[in-house]
Image (cartoon, rainbow, N blue to C red):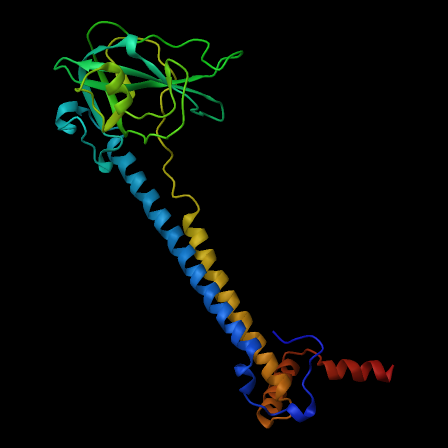
Length: 292
């Protein structure tokens, strides 16, 4: 932390700690405080991200492979959805409204662009639930799939895993037969019915009638990521900065108080410890060079 070429003169020795009141050192302390606070916030943010990931893993563990529950017993109203219900497996009986199927565009899967097949499913009680029947890739020569698996016709039983509907993005449009986001009220408007579930939709798990589907969503990997290590790294950065400041402070104190008896005594003790470990001091090395 000392400035190059500004070694204190002999007249400035034995100043004690007065130099700490200089503008330079006050700036160092302020910078350290700001840096430590920033590191603290960033570390806390990473801890929070880790907690969120753990909560997500708990939902996957609890719901992904659980037995299905009736849709109307999980979602008590059409706009109902609780974040803790994510991945809950629901079951419904009815038929697909294949003529009202839409494709959600710009959906990557394994690094490839593609679409999600969104097919409305009308239950026997008359409600409409949107089912994601899987992913299909973008066509080889056009911005649409080469083929889309057809949903089975007739009455069947479907199980799906709940996912929250997406937010609408103003200004984002899509060609006919496609949508930019899975904004569920869009389906309610296009279907012309007020009996559409708008709080959540479902990722297809199974159909009682054998039919081809797109690539179904796999079970998420249960990992906490690197958030814990990042959080600890920010703490370490703050500690390193503090240690560096203390080291610079100590070195400048010795430089400004080089003829202070306490400093001389400390230097003598340090030299004695080095000798006891069998290491040559700088003075000993210089003497040997002069002898040669």
